[in-house]
Length: 335
Image 1 (cartoon, rainbow, N blue to C red):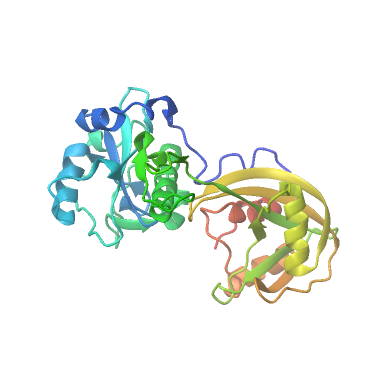
Image 2: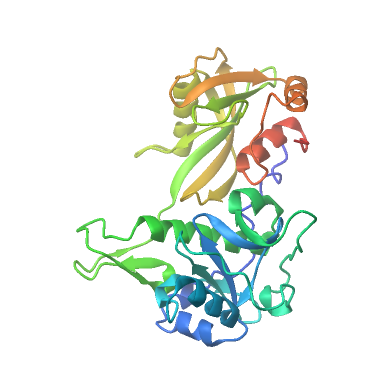
């Protein structure tokens, strides 16, 4: 196996300074809002504002603030709606603006291709035929973004999801307020501070002695959708133990050797996917019937035929699952 293959996964390719030292500065966000060089992306419910199928739409503060105030019907965008994502090499700050789920999407007042709208080196894609700028799920466009945009968009979606799901203190139940430029929440009742969660999950390409790949169908997926097995790491468990347990629980297949291949943030809403290759020593398949309703072994020829026939739908290109499948396959699968 090529040890470099899973290093540069979609959604895991951040090339921007996360500027962690700036977060504790009370004026970090106000200073960024006052700087005309600051770039802003807009995030809402797992989606980002785009210029087409393969590019984040970057705004100036003035553009996005004016439009956000118009669509939200307020005099000013609340300060806690802004998140500090990082800083560019030239010192310009990068912010995200969180929109409520019900809010209309800003349309953009400045020229879509203005240089100030994109961090240096960022990919900008004009709308292709039949497409246009709009609102896109990171799951869909993530694989097409360049390293900078992918990292920033993933961070914005992850933080937005965490704020949306954790408005109250887990200790006393009181409402919390945003702190550290969007990177924590503080309870003023009991004084506790809370940080974004990341839940570790394992995802594994299980391969047998005949070099066949095990794929499973989750109960909630559409017909024909198959992917590598996956599951959350339990309390008191190592990632390698979780690989063996999840494979056994979901398919009754037993694995021995487990090799780490790479990781990927998966902000839907807040997981870190730890990718593995696992070797099966018992290959009889019996699915649990609850999480996984079907599973089977594929040779490369069988997988190719099923994909071409449309009976096998593989995971999307933005996912580490697709990377694990294609690593086993030996190259890109056209599907």
